[in-house]
Length: 386
Image (cartoon, rainbow, N blue to C red; front, top):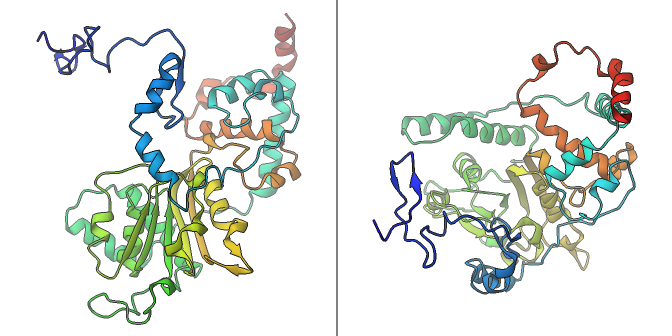
């Protein structure tokens, strides 16, 4: 017990089992954080370090070796898909100034709270008007093909653990792709023999490829491979995952699999030599926030055309977006569209922050006595001036 951390774990009804630091009764996980400034690690912003220890930490950070190895890859180009920041003055500009690269949710919230009541109501009216004018044709399209249905039933019969919600989403993505003819060229079921060997394409670079962005464990690609017989796959993911679909995909002798562990923001897809000359299909499920914009820029960049020859001819693209509150003006790929609608950078960030309201329960009952907030404008204005 003397050699253990003195932090008590109520749920386990015991002390922490880790060894304490030399100068502390607690381990590194439970030592109270210093009041000194903490800053994100420049190699991996997912963890922080004391500013005074930054120089020493960078030299021994576990991600240092990975970063050095990645920088040597021909397809690594820092920030190639990041986009550019365009400054446009607006009612929120003072609150968001000085942070061109990454506007956090807290900064967005503070900027919105800094609006006057008339400015806030004007922004809401603009959003409603814009929605009515451009979103009338949006419709639900849930499609599950026979091939996916057979696959899903087979997985259930095998009693394998999988989340039905995600499987249904994956099947619908593939169903919509098939309905629009996107999978026609990539469906290899009729081009392979009984043993799964491709009989039509002798040159592997002529084989159509599928590139999954933000692949995670790769289960969307696994369903695509199992149901449609694709035999060339590139999985793009910046993190390392256990219990992934790679082991199942690699068991297919006819399938060529390559995993690129890299942030989409830094990926020059057209420098991946093994993809040169291959028509490819880009897919992605849960491309959070700006990852969607990074993917579009990665696939459609001018770097795709060299000497009037398209190195990687894209044949189709299917992306399921999510986490819109994380979107950034810098990364957004079609700023001109919003500017044409009268939405500037600061209003864009406010709108992205508002998107979290759609999944944050129904608070209508909390405002049952409020018919129209505009009726309270005179009272609110008085409160602002007092």
